[in-house]
Image (cartoon, rainbow, N blue to C red; front, side):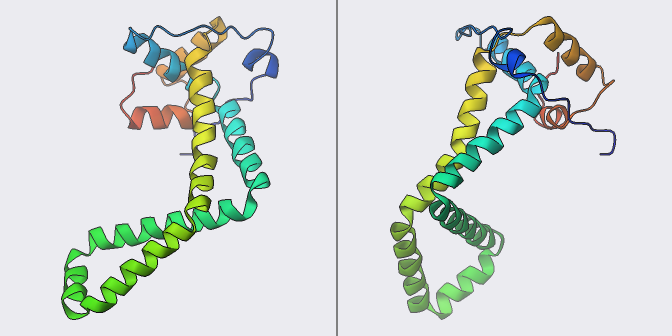
Length: 175
């Protein structure tokens, strides 16, 4: 919506270097660990967006063709699966009317996937790497006073950010 604003990019000093305090989360207390992740996702969301774009860009720079081909195949397979699940009647009719064509299609798609499996892996890695980096930082970065204040402002609804909207949609409690 129009009142949703992306928060400012936090300084590299606050995000990673001098002022950044890192500590191992308490793995036994899942609620506290989840709270740390949610609050860091809210406070550093612009930095995390930048990290995700840079990481995806680096993988794409190192393996451009594989990323593009893998992304295309991945999206194509997702589209076919979505069509097949939403149109079961049409698929059943096609299966009954043209069984040989369906077998040839399945063999062709399987061959294409096997041939481009490396590209699919590169594409999945280009998505998974930024997510891993963000999750690691959000898990290990300890909160500071500014972080807590900004998260309270978001929680009471004085400020709306994209990550806050996503967290509310996922029924995460903002504290």
